[in-house]
Length: 326
Image (cartoon, rainbow, N blue to C red; front, side, top):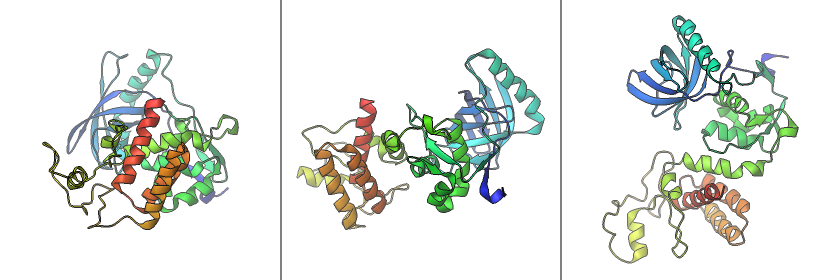
């Protein structure tokens, strides 16, 4: 089998899925972080901010089960391009012996901490994968979401690669992360349905939208009209028929573009007819209690009109309601 027909696992050493507190000293400053996994030669971190690929860093790792922390120098092997800020750190060769001793001490401190299951070094593109059990707490990046949606109710890795197109080369690391966390499986008997993942993926997508916290902070009052995420203040003034309430945020231009989603308004880029139709159909689905149908229509509408605050607002409330009832 040729290299073109396989996917190479970028990790060659075992990793334990363990949460260790970490302080990352980077050229731009010091960041708080937490390990998602840890091995004798490197780790994956979730950090409070971005660190560039290739930068030299110094980590101070600690765990409640070990009396002393350890300081390890390394280099950022890869880093996410957006929040949640994840990065992989390869430890310097001179640090491997000390890092290995600390790692072994951590494994020995509890029977509950151990190396994750060993993944193959190579996986054929013709292999079929299915969705495993969704996580209780959502923490997925865009590449992981794209892969999970492409897998659906089972798909070959070749078809997943085709669905992701130019994003596939950068997403392959995310594939192995999903396999390590058992969100993907090669065993059809342990698979779950795509619809069982829908709310989880929706919540993850909303969480990656900058305006999402406003939508997910609280459910909309029953008697009030649905509030849109990030609606400009002047729109709220028109709806109320008067002046802005004290303490209201300053009005924004209707064509203001936010970080990755943006604002929409009549003076900027009006909502495309297809998106408007999907939104109305989604409201009809919700009125009939068909939540899954509404979600599908809203996702389609948001794909046609990225960043539309009203569509994002409805999605955000659905994600909140799903999390509250879970």
